[in-house]
Image 1: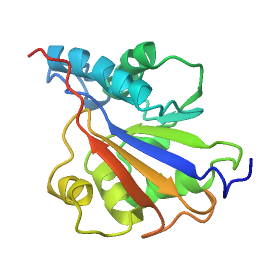
Image 2: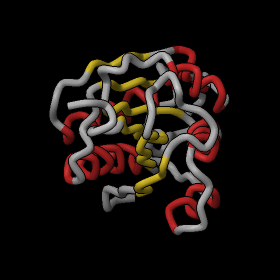
Image 3: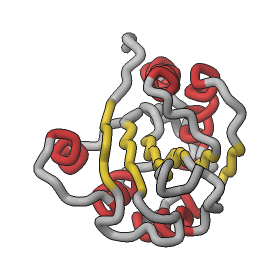
Image 4: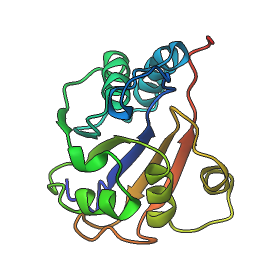
Amino acid sequence: MTAAAHPARLIVLRHAKAAWPDVPDHERPLAPRGRADAPAAGRWLRDCGRAPDLVICSPARRTRETWELAAAELGGDPEVVYDPRAYRAEAEDLLDLLRKVPETRRTVLLVGHRPAVQDLVLLVAVERTDEPFSRVREKYPTSAAAVLALPGTWAQLGPGGALLTAFAVPRGGTG
């Protein structure tokens, strides 16, 4: 199957709700609500048939915990890269990471932080007036996931180069 027949897909997931204990930012764990919402994000991805074959995750504790809890519900065994460049990144930094993704990877999940994840989606998505795009522009809550279809290669990904196909905020029902 060619890349054109099966466009690449990017899923941008903001980490679940974090706690605010007296620890360095990098070491902040998930709050109880985040521990409920992260598995819901994994179930949403699974139920929509959006299992990644590559995960790029910030190494911060809250993003790692989000991925681990989501992965337990998602199934599969994707390659996972904990990339320090995804922590305290800006949208352009994340875009540079994504441009280096091998073309053999068809679905990539990026687990990161706001505002960079929101800014990335707004940067690479074709601007539209539909409901998913306006929701992303308005707010990118914890556990939110944006799904984008890429008509070209990872290396070609740039401003306005992807189509936002879904935006969801899965919740775990507690807290």
